[in-house]
Length: 117
Ligand code: FES
Image (cartoon, rainbow, N blue to C red; front, top):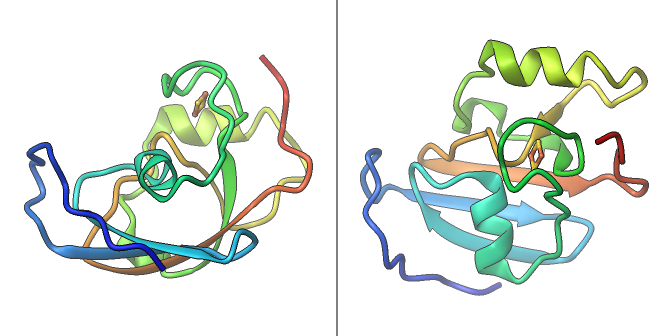
């Protein structure tokens, strides 16, 4: 597990948010307001992001295994984007859209990332 000291401010404050990337065996701490994609970057966990975090592809899709309540609610653009990819796990989120809230979240990268773009 790697602990991270944030270098940028966040609207959500600096509550302790932990994200475990269960398939990578890595846990990282990040401030509230960071996205799951930000947390992956801090952790050094490779996570595709073809549209650079603009909710326009599906490459950053992850399965939230536990701790959904410690992420921001899904907004319509993310929901609509996920609906374009049938067969995703029930806990699927776009890592670039899900903001961290204080608490612990466990996610799994998809073995075969969705490549629609
Ligand atoms: S990086 Fe494209 S939707 Fe997240």
